[in-house]
Image 1: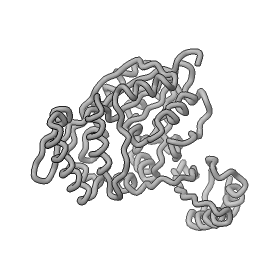
Image 2 (image 1 turned 120 degrees about the vertical axis):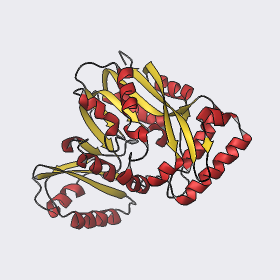
Image 3 (image 1 turned 30 degrees about the vertical axis):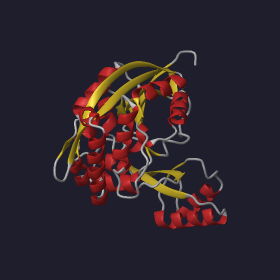
Image 4 (image 1 turned 90 degrees about the vertical axis):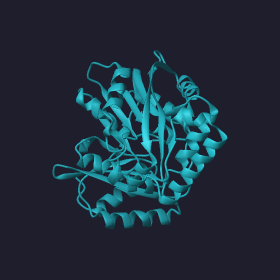
Length: 325
């Protein structure tokens, strides 16, 4: 067992900076972080890192991942996540996910971009052995406190990078409201393919659309859903999603549509968007409605003085790893 931060520091210093480190023990977090930062300075590397930890009985499970992505938005929204917006905890969506899967035996699953664990609580309910991976410490820790994520199944990692699991490990990989945040979708799907067992299944639940005009609107709106600078969003069309899956040797076996009803004031209440960005979002929506009337019907948009209501189309897609691949 690691007794103190000095021993931990020695172990970290000997390992590759891009690897994942999982150690059981206790430590002085602040002291160790300071020493780790001195290592990166000596190596002249600009590496940001976060520390996630979950108590397991009297021990502490530590998992590191070096990363560069800004997590401020997700940390801010973690406190009120799902309190006002139904879709994050909607039992109807969970039921739809189960129906499209068709699994009726015990299986091992990976919830990628799990947030607080709401996206796979239905899997645990039917006896699945679920592992939870997310980039944000606040989301994982709140999921643990809520009892949705077992402490020994929480892994903090950059899900868009190399994942810390062996090949042929999981029967199922779930990505719910994750893919639109990933630019290189093919790289992620290829990585997931390698982690799945033969005939393994991937289930993707995400915002999706039918044509390029809807895609442009979707991404314009969601790029404003932030407290910081306008950030890119990579929502894709149904045809593109199917193409990515086929290119990565997945056979699409099931598909269903779900409607996420959201009022922009709910984003404000959950602190997913700043007041400034909210004003920009309303102005942008009005501009789109004036220039493209078909958008109103496609997204069921209704405007009020200080908010907009949307009916966002969400696709539930299941892909099966092709045999012999």
